[in-house]
Every structure is written in structure tokens, then in C-alpha cells.
Amino acid sequence: MGTTINQALSAAILRILRPLVRMLLRKGVSYGTFADLAKWVYVDVARQEFGIDRRKQSTSRVSILTGLTRKEVTRVQRLPRPDDQESAERYNRAARVIAAWRREADFLDAEGQPAVLSVSGKGASFSELVHRFSGDIPVRAIRDELIRSGTVGKLKDGRLHLRDRAYIPKTSETDKFHILGTDVSYLISTIDHNLQPDVPQPFFQRKVAYDNLSNEILMKFRKLTGRTAQAFLEKIDRWLARHDRDMNPDIAGTGRNKAGIGIYYFEEHSPEEDT
Image (cartoon, rainbow, N blue to C red; front, side):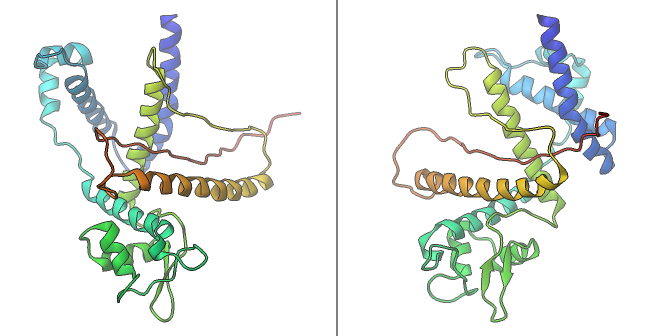
């Protein structure tokens, strides 16, 4: 049984690594750089999550857990940790603005749709939207990014309208790589949770896929999933916003937790089989 599990895990790792390595090679990231990053994570996880209660994690124990020499553990610990905090802040702020524009009554029109907003002025304006839901970041910086990404459009009279109900950075590769890191991490963490023995309540994890679809049906499927998934996510967003204590400080409760749900579309071409 152990060999079977190890083989299955090895096969899963290969499937995970293939698209990642394809991306790394495209960006000129060498194996040496990737290896150092992998070693850094091995050491960090061993130190942070596999310690013994009330005992400081030693270099020797980290070496045993990871299979790295004590000298290599010490070297890896001195490597600088890559930081994408700037990209994370920029993406999160822009996403919060778009979500609030879709959700908050002050910024909706009479039909309940995102209103066309003046850049500034009294009442509901884009400046007010940014100040309320994106903190102290300059309004122009958010406006320019949302226009550049195609999420927001500018009318002839200078007012702004929402063109896309979700913010996806299109020009900043650093922001796109931030999404890669967070979204894939969440998915693997969910699977890891569900693989733990005696989990009282597994996290929701499902997918639907068929493997003999025509080229013509894919366009219809993309539109269907885009429309229905976006509507579902907006419903979840409204529910979570009502229960988030950053937005509603009067809500009682203990602890501080992050929770959410992600949806992704995938497709791949399969070679035609001989009949």
C-alpha cells in the first residue's frame, strides 16, 4: 500500500510541476533558482509546522526532516524571501473596489446595476468608492489601472462605467503571478486538508469535466461558465461582505479567519483517435 501511495503522490507531483516548469522555462527561471526556492520552502515548513511542542526547532531536526545537510539548511535559511507584497496590495485594492461597485447600494443605479460614476464630487463618485473600499491609495492610480485592464471604461463626459464585473490584471505580469501563487496555494491547501485522516468536515472540492467535446461547443461552454460562475461568485461575495468584521466592526465573534471559494475553467486539446 505504501508503494502505491508513493507512486500516486509522485505522479500527482509530476502533473502539478509540468505547467509550472513550462511557465518557469518561458520566463528564464533556471533549475538552480527553482531548487533553492524548493529548499527554502522545505526548511521553512519544517521549522514552522513540524516542531516539537515547547521545544525550539533545531537545525539538526530540520536536516533530518528535509534530507538536507545541516550546512545546507543553514545556507538556505539565509536566503532572502521573495516578497510580492506590493503586487498583493495593488491587486486586492482594485478587486475590493470592483466588488463594492457591484454590491453596495450607494453605487448602484435604479435597476440595481453598477452605476455610471463621476470621478469626483458630492455623493456617489468614483473617488468616494475608492476612499471607502481601498484605503489611502491615490484615486488616480486605481482609476488608471482599472482603465488599463479594461475593467472600467471612460465616457466622453469623463464619467466612468464598469465594463467587466471582475478585475483581472491584463498588463502587469507581477500581479498575474501573485494570483498564481495565491489561487494555486489555496487549491492545494484544500486538497491537503481533505487528505488528512479523520477530517471531521472535508472542504468542498468538486469539478465537472468531459473529454470528447467538439471545438464548436467550447465557445458556448466558456460563455455559460463565465456567466453562471460570475453570478454565483457575486452571490457569495455579498454574503461574505455582510459577515466580514473589517466592513462591519459591530459583528461579534471570536478568532480571525480567511475563507472563500474559487472557480476556474480549464480545457486541453486531445489528439484525434483513430476510428
